[in-house]
Length: 122
Image 1 (tube, rainbow, N blue to C red):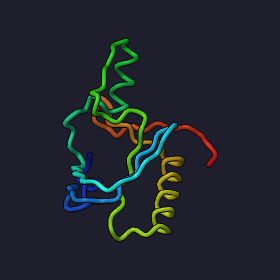
Image 2 (image 1 turned 180 degrees about the vertical axis):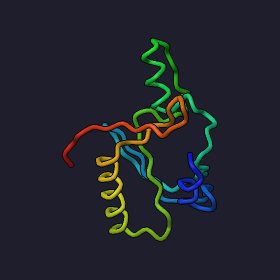
Image 3 (image 1 turned 135 degrees about the vertical axis):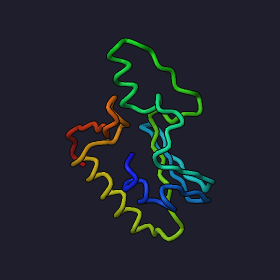
Image 4 (image 1 turned 120 degrees about the vertical axis):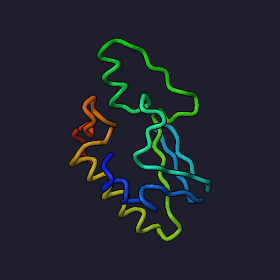
């Protein structure tokens, strides 16, 4: 990732703390408080990114995700200054941006950002 994208969260792309955490998949959702640590640009497990897995699938290779890895879930963290109204505004804005620009899925083999598009009505 470029350094410009990395600077958009925390201190130079690094953030940690305790936050309100929501997790959801197609058949459940939950919430809690919990600790988190995010380091944008880090790629400790690049083979878990969707772009890599899609390339591998085309070559008919099988990739197995770790049990602890996110699979069909999403996780959203809310900082302590985010109100319920602001959370809804930000989530709607994010959904609209994904709708317009696609879902970031990792890097291409040449290191470019890879996106996946799907036309949906929200």
